[in-house]
Image 1 (cartoon, one colour):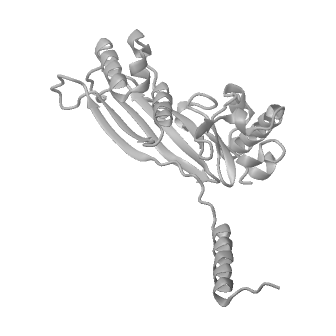
Image 2 (cartoon, rainbow, N blue to C red; image 1 turned 135 degrees about the vertical axis):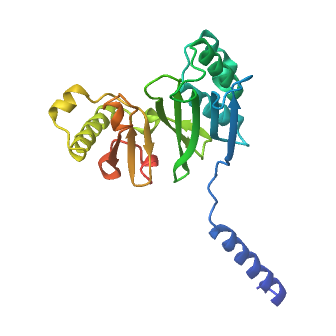
Image 3 (cartoon, rainbow, N blue to C red; image 1 turned 180 degrees about the vertical axis):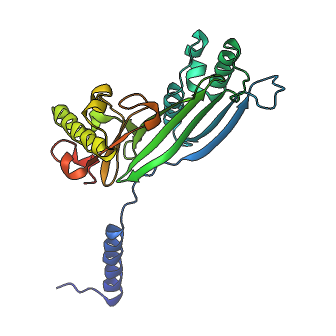
Length: 259
């Protein structure tokens, strides 16, 4: 019967130990790398104390130009302009292109300066949630033209599946055929929100619930967010309806319920 020498036995033990150690090491989840991006654009040839300006406080993805471009596209789309030139691809996907189109509209509208302050546009992107290899960003815009009573804010969630490196929407997160069940949960969340802000049926009749696909799948709940004037007057802001994870079981895919 063949025998292992002491040296061979030790080597085999080390090899087995090494294999077990390697197998027990946790696999690091794929993490999307982001970098902060800060830019400021001021209307050219402006000699006023307060000049029309665009401020960008966003993110970029150094390893994915596709995601960087998608973020820019979505954020710029939240702050639409009225001119024909605003439809140019450079305006829709680059900060400088949007800034030029914004300043053009300011000049055409004669909104360069007013006692109410300079025209401004703000484009922002921040991390809103991060768990289970899901990165949720909150994109915010604010556009104000001098002379208006107030500016117009807008918000959109951008959900990125870090495992695939792609964005996902509500349709990707729900089990097929469960859309109506999800809308019932939103209706229930809307009623809870009305109770919290102490509004009655008259308010709900004047500001009925509308459909929103702006959803953030967080670690402990889902958030459905609406823009101003969607389901409430401007003074209320941008309402957020919350749905607990337990209520979503059997409606949303386990991937998006922290499972």
